[in-house]
Amino acid sequence: MHFEDFTVGQRSTAPCGTVTEEDLATFGDLLGQVLARRHAPPGEVTGAQWRRHGGLRAGDTPRCEVTTTRCARSGEAALVTAHVALRTSTLVEEGSLTVAVPARTTDPVRPGRAFGTLGWAEALADRLGADQAFTAATATWDGTLGLRCGDAEVHLRIYRGRIVDVTRRTPHGATFTVGASELTWTDLVTGPDGDFLRAAMRGAFEVTGSGCEYLRLTKVLDLVVGHARALARDEEDR
Image (cartoon, rainbow, N blue to C red; front, side, top):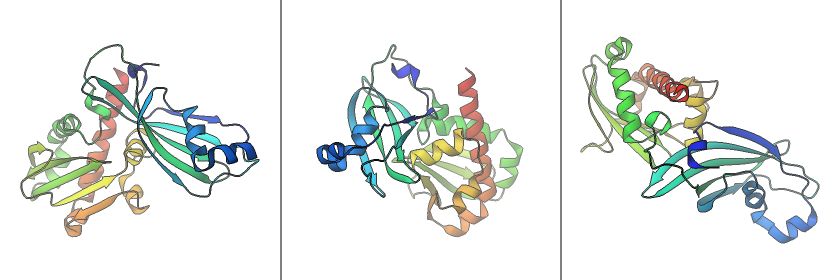
């Protein structure tokens, strides 16, 4: 497969076979990664994180769930990040793998699903600026909204209903920042349930900065997610 064959939000599930005592003796804690690599994007691994919850036992027949959470370019490299979960009756191991994959072209990544990047934030700001509901909800607000996806963060500087700047960092920092993992953003923006408040109440998002201002702008955040979902749909239709 090539870089152009991957899209953020792609999901697949497949059985991993039966775990044997020999598997456990041979691979130990690396078993999950070995099983995951059979289903994750093929290519040179450039980064990996792994966490064990309950561990695997001989006789288990886990299934492997793979979700593409980022497609990015770094210099000449085309990189795909996937979240991998191994489940039996419960989640036993999970992690993420970033692999360098071959690409057919050198075209830049489209911004609609590049959460947390400047291109994504600028496209989002264009949509929000044309939304009267957003203008009304921020008509009396003067502050900076931070949006973080994994390690990528952007700031929207808002003044009385208008987004006046989109940047990676503002001089005085964000009034508050809403952050989550790449998987959480992927699920919220490309999955069937786009309810930000429900996800926040489950603890999927972390808020830093002013909690009072965050509570004042929960309606605005719901609008942000709604437009992010629309951007993702528009990209899928191209």
